[in-house]
Length: 557
Image 1: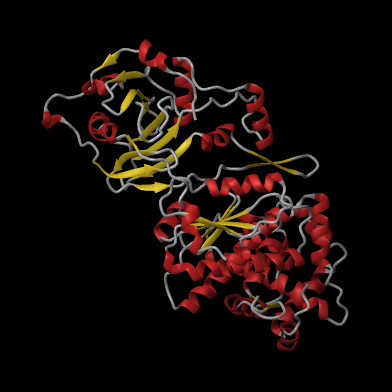
Image 2 (image 1 turned 180 degrees about the vertical axis):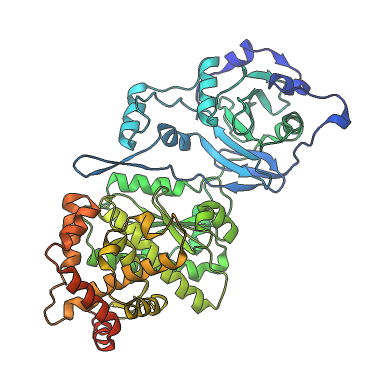
């Protein structure tokens, strides 16, 4: 892509020697070798095949994917929910090429200089509002020094400190500029460059950006010298190649699930493209598709059966969700699943809060993220994967099925655990008791009447016991939510008077109408004698006869 002639930079800014780049960045080089701090070692060569770029990265650095933009939910007066984003987060993927981080926390971000983002009057924008603003603004690439600084500040997320300065680029580069950013949480050094005419087809009019983020305590002078000597000199070109993730995925794609229905909305197809774009520039990452999902992963070829089984399980359980809890409107977003091949990478991605999890649905990222299963036999790994997928995929599904309306913890977590007991490899759907929570329910019921009213009114912080961090209380809440949904789905409908079988249906109808999970719970249990209900619910978990009848009830759809 050509973003205009920026020869004005070389004409208007003074050229200075390569060895004085530290000064032009606002850094003061030290002459005595013994006084110099520790720089950074650049060793392995990295590539961005789609752009034809070759360069060195920090020793030990690993590529890091571009996370999905954070979504902000606005609940309107009528109860509807709107998705909004920071405009920068919607602009950034259009100029981002890749990111590499080393163990010290130093990062290199590569980008392509493109149009400036349009001005926006509010902090947050919908995707449609942002797209309309782009069309109306006629955004263009930087044409002045001030516009270049504004572009770099938007890309880096912090203000620049000095004017950009040029220095001698070497034989492969036509021009290179260096700029230092204001010292905020960490120092940043930026470089804007373009290549001379070359045999590989890399456009000599195209400008690129390299942004270095230095960890606190770094000797910025020494790092700048290392960049000058090793990184700048390594910048080169190669023949452009197509995205190799599509070729890598052939061995993982489940052929029977590869087609995407032709009646999908433009919004669905756009979300699919964004999901695939999230692994751009990540070596070893690939994607596969099913009618409702995009699965991205860096698992190796030896896990082919695992990945194909995952595709089968996702679509099979999705069909059950849709029959038991039909979506209230057409779902216009693909469901993104990210499967890591390394447990440490999984933890870095989901954060310490989810360190001990095997998988997690993160609505702010719009991703279901799965940890690699590295223990036990193949049969045990598959069973564990199925349990986690059935649970977390329900959270993902219900998020979209109710058009982003928040559901109550008892309903959401209760159903997620309920589906952990699903057996999809039979001719009919069977949902069994979940062993890890049966003993908890039996103990709670034996201790006295189960506190159903309290459970129904818990918000998410209370349900997860985030304030105290009491894992026993949290486990009890999960068990009771599951026990309640299991009773309402499998026990109550076959009771003699079946007076409670409509509660879940009433909750879903009320949730859609009121768009308020608390109001929906109240309406679902309106007219129910809660003392009698709690006693019946408690007796169910103490009665082997009633539970035996429920276990044999497979009429769930």
